[in-house]
Length: 577
Figure 1 (cartoon, rainbow, N blue to C red):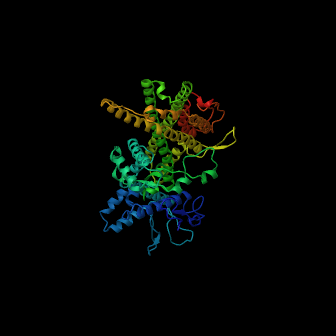
Figure 2 (cartoon, rainbow, N blue to C red; figure 1 turned 90 degrees about the vertical axis):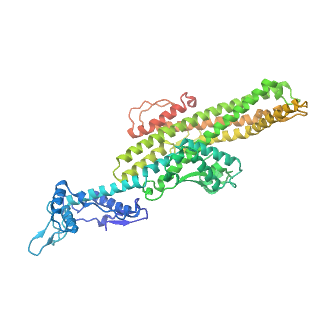
Figure 3 (cartoon, rainbow, N blue to C red; figure 1 turned 60 degrees about the vertical axis):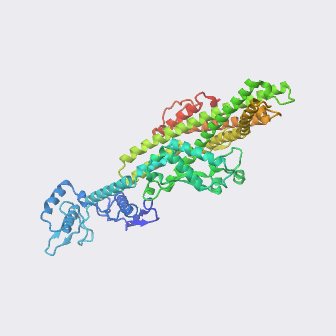
């Protein structure tokens, strides 16, 4: 036996070569041995392929077509001999004899039967035994490998829809189906906002939201065998706490573990895509882990983008209401009873400053999120997919397909800033991982959106109440009655005074400063990542193009997109000061 079974994975590591059992005869050939290491490896792959065809592809009737092993001359001779052949068995023996699959045996009359076209040798025992022909064996194994791989790839692509499933993974887990994701986020927001916590979130409701998002968007045109594998997973609280995405720079690891995290539906939600054999040979568990890692980032980005758009809508409504109050009733309409004009003027100034701070901070975050999303979706995912399709079309073996898919995911992980690159700060001496720093930037944006919802939520509800009360007052006035007979805080616009609190303004300014600081560190780390293998490079700011004397071509190719990203994020060199 040349091979030994070591685990239950039918392709990755299921069998390995046993070096001590590879046939070896020192007097044969220039280096000795019946077969070389490369030939033994190829035989191993052929054996693994046959086992894969039988057990994963469930194609037990498949056999080698030995006729394809023959050269053109031998094949023509076989057709000529077929006219005089009495049985299929004799035909099979003729094919094996032409290929060298036979033994040198004594016929009893002093003659022996030997292959006609190959250089045959006796073994060292001097007895009649197996005819050893390295050229025949190598040629046969090579052709057998071609047949095995051709059948495996044809079955995976045509019967098991490998390309369509890879496309489905990209559209679902990499959020490539944009209208589907937008519809899903709207449905999830409606569901999660109606519940506090995660106790009242049920799988059947989530499944209904998923199916509605599919039916109402172009996702319904995806193949049925793709849609059947898409489902929702609700993570346990323990899983969420151990793999929390949102972080705080000031929290120690011990505090992060002991902190009571208030979870909502967004934290436990995850899309899933089922992969089973034989596709698991290509999309193996390690690959799926990378898919979910990238999905986790992209989904959080989409959520923050959705929340920032929501904060813009809230700010627009509140600003319009404030302008309406001032234009219709003047500044006095916003002055509570007993408030001096001087204090009222200061409060109104702080109110406007808070709204301006919100707007400026939101613009910075929208700029970062939109550019990062554009970079990930187009320069990382679409570019990577195009390269993957090209490699898959040129692949001739299953190992080449697996390697192309692994490289596709590895490059996406690296370009998505999810690889662990550590930078030590010169200011505070702390170490920052690139992935953690990106999460910190996104966490700051998340804190901003939550603070915005908390501060503006009551004011927006009061605006709706005030509008309804004014309509009621107009109806009463038309009927000859008093519109209002007492002071109404909602109608008087007193809710605006919650926006002039000094602590609220300070909190938002701190969040804005934290965002600038964390993004500055991220750009600095990206700068070092881009120019890490470049010698004699002049790089003073994250956005300036370095003067490169020599760089590794592969790393330079991978980092071009990152260099363009840093330029877009800091085109004015605001974060370089």
